[in-house]
Length: 339
Image 1 (cartoon, rainbow, N blue to C red):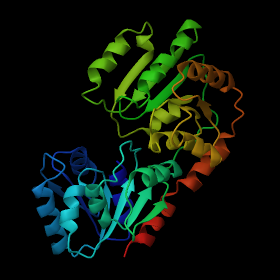
Image 2 (image 1 turned 180 degrees about the vertical axis):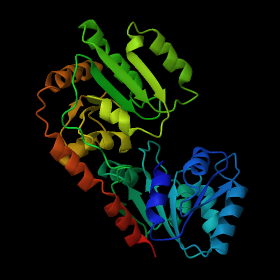
Image 3 (image 1 turned 60 degrees about the vertical axis):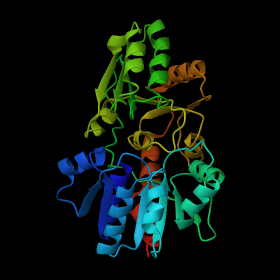
């Protein structure tokens, strides 16, 4: 989705070719929603990160279209792209949206990353992570460009409140993304007879589905949890919610979390990765101690107590999100780096 969003932004001003793996999510999304866009989609079939098919396809596109600028979303496939770029005068930008844990400063990665002109981190946390993990060539520069909101929020200051607390989590359902912790935190509401609904929006990782369903089926409050799956109309779920609960273990910078802030939702996260940075930018929300489920429960109770007498200035929060995560600003930051 990040690659799609940036391609849409940049195609307003420059010619954009989007090269993706054949049969992937981006290809199906493009066929459904982007056929009338100015983005030209090209696909390549490959099964391993180092692929002659990627090298051949990328080199042919670079030559046919006299491409000068390349923005790469990913990690492993850069090994193939290095050889596709070899001998060409290119401006290569690598965008980093997730936290990396394994150092990549061996001789092979130093060679592969030597083709990079700019590393683009989407927050300070990831910029620090890139500096610690990724090798830099003499020409390579690091820049922070905050991602823009995917859509303009429809702020609802006077949300209709009833006894039921409406909790929301939006994100791919996978290990470490916070759904398991959100479900566990709801036990405190069940124990205290606080009526609630937890809505989980996002496609489920097939490798995670079995263990996720096993956890869900063990809960006596399973009927209060609604798994929506993937949807293109996320806005209505923000509008219906009271509290956005996102206890992720290792996000870069969550699109759904900054969207929840922009919709004026009361938000809760663990104190890790980029979440303290968001508070430093001026956003107000609840931070539970990292990986502390009991503190997460306490913060959830505190948020519920405050929902009818919110001390967090929701309108100011929404306006701040529109300024910090502006689409025009993100686009111009990228355009300034293109040659």
